[in-house]
Length: 324
Length: 267
Image (cartoon, rainbow over all chains, first blue to last red; front, side, top):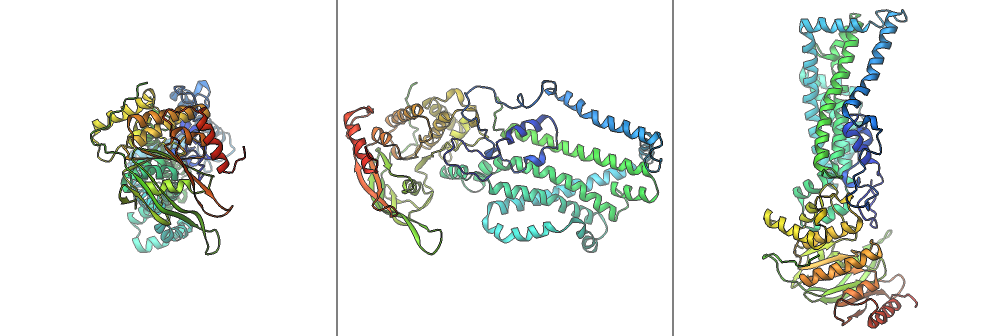
């Protein structure tokens, strides 16, 4: 990422494939490529064939995707094949005697458990409170991560002062905070939201500060030579350059937020999906346990899809390939 | 292609650039010693002139240019634009870099607009950008992104961006160095067209002897006396020929041989 090759005709980076990756994620999978793309900035994503004949179509998706997958609904349908197969396999193993109903209840039993919880109103309570904790914690954590990441990414002084400490704090395993949080913040909502915020903070902080350090210095210098500085310089050059990294960081942060939520709820709560997990375990309700896991998968995917919508909007706005 | 460029009313006249005993040293890699790159460079570029700085690589050519733009500072002496000493990034200058340095997420037109002086009204700015794109022959590519145009086109966009600033001093740091021979000649012609329409001061760094001779009123040759010592002005050559000049002109070829010998290339 830190190539500053003065002889090259266009700003480019070692990460030449990032543009292809961006094109694929835009339509196909929503979360899988987020990790791969972290650190790739549009400034660095100029393709190697910069000298291509003008007017020729951008080589966005046509090269990397077979014909049958050009339609988004087709992609969606194909993505459903595996889950359906999984349910079928699950059903087979739960009915043919391989596992006892306590070990592996039938899919229909899990559905029934869900229906039962839905009618008693508990389902919405658990789902609602968990989602609320994740969203509030994610907003606080990623907001702070953006702020501190920007500060330490832009200012060598702030970096020298703050980076070692934040690095050490990041090294503390998440669960180690739980006893302290219970002691300081109490067993209520605040401790859980704080833990989720801690989980969401670090991915954003790390990706943003690293990406800002690696914005093409040539571009910054050129913009400075045209009189841009301060906030204007930031919003004109650095921010668009690190936007893909910011979004990768946000997606990782959201995944971490759900992870930390379950950790928080497992350890001391009376509602939420994590509570549903422990409670079901204690009462031998494997059907509810599986239900909680399925719900976590669905909710995680849904919230990630929301970020995917935001990502596609930014890609349209700041695409390096043009929107004509 | 028409090359009529009307200067906006806010435009000001070309400025003079004076180098007064300019020197540059860098801290050496180890120890407290400093590595002196440039020593005692004194010359003046008069308003509206095209001056090239020629010299072997690493002799501090770009340092001189950056000192004018305010992107770097001289260790010794001072650089003046007209009568004021350059201390920070100077709004009277515009820089064309060796690489186009276009923002990859902006269209060509919006990249050129980046060069507009601070506070240009939107409509005037739009007109000016359209005019400049016409001048550099990029009107049909105004909405392309930098990744979608060729290297030569990107370099033209970079030149247009620098011109958008209505610079009193246009600084060009090996602007055509990375281009193929044919594109380079076209760009040199374009630069002369632009200069004829809008005779601002042009200070250009190059390592291309022919380019310097074909374009410049004066060629400042930097050279080192010893292999490791600092570079300083060896000679200033002033080809007194009307432009456009033929590359085969006998005076040009004679000067080329002289310059190459000066730079240590045997003919």
